[in-house]
Amino acid sequence: MIQASGLRKHYGETVALDGVDLHVREGEIYGVLGQSGAGKSTLLRCVNLLERPTAGTVAVAGQDLTALGDGELNRARQRIGMIHQHFALLSSRTVAGNVAFPLEVMGVPRAERRRRVAELLALVGLDGRGKDRPHQLSGGQKQRVGIARALAGNPSVLLSDEATSALDPATTQSILALLKRLNTELGLTILLITHEMDVVKTVCDSVAIMSGGRIEESGAVADLIRTPGARLTREIFPLPEPAPPGVVTLTFTGDPGRPVVSEVVRKFDVDVSILGGSIEELAGGSAGRLRVALDGAETGAALAYLRDCGLIVEVAGETREGRAA
Ligand SMILES: Nc1ncnc2c1ncn2[C@@H]1O[C@H](COP(=O)(O)OP(=O)(O)OP(=O)(O)O)[C@@H](O)[C@H]1O
Image 1 (spheres, rainbow, N blue to C red):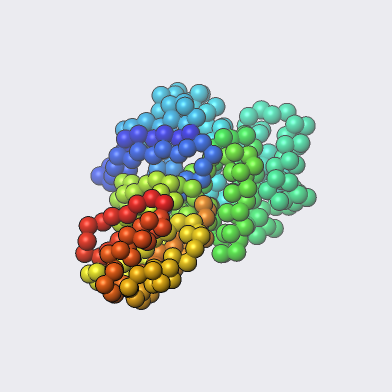
Image 2 (image 1 turned 60 degrees about the horizontal axis):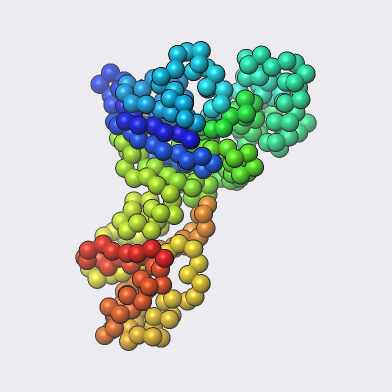
């Protein structure tokens, strides 16, 4: 749905994007995670060409935006909604007036605008709040107005620029739940940028980790977690690094369906000490990482058994290895 290739963006001497390739599939929620200055906002603004990249191409829904003239680009942008960290609402307009704004720009007749605005406000849970002014709303409600406005043109893609960064944790969760619902019900493809791992954990199907204008790691969250050595896994399930030589790290996605650790102890001449670990509920299901020390005559056979059970097994100091379930 979104295909960016070889994106570069220079601001004078500053290289904000240093050759970025991004592939967002239709219907997924894709998160770009990175610290301040990593280039996330620049990437997002290059996707809808609010910023023209210094080099590279961007295609959305098969249309190469970088090849379009201004008129065609404006029409293409109507199919790309955007929401912002600080909501960017017009304080002089009512809630309904804010949502109606893009419809006015598109030349939608008044009666149709009213119908559409009412529909959009109901969709984001703001039924009956159309006459309010933005200052009468909470942060979460303001972001709901921002989302309704972004959906006015029936976009196939929604870009989210740190949309939950100004919100408290409970409100963040309610806005993420709304985005997930819109993704599922409308088939909306969502590209969001964030510096919060919790956002990635809660809603993202895929992720790119950015640093210094480059993508360091990208892919489906479930695939990355099963990739030995992935940075995403280490950040979601932090454990002391590096592990002492011989210590074993077990990573798993989904429910193993049986108590594999106690099975190993019963089946093999081996003792297992649990040194640390955690289990997280991710958008695509649960996943976990456990650090253990194995001691006994059948350690090798026990590790082979754990691999056969579908766990990713990494032994500190040995060559990385693992296999899919
Ligand atoms: N309009 C601009 N003019 C000059 N430099 C810019 C401009 N926009 C971004 N930069 C620079 O580009 C780099 C990447 O900035 P960008 O805002 O894309 O990062 P970010 O990951 O979104 O960070 P933040 O979360 O703090 O916004 C930074 O060094 C920033 O100073």
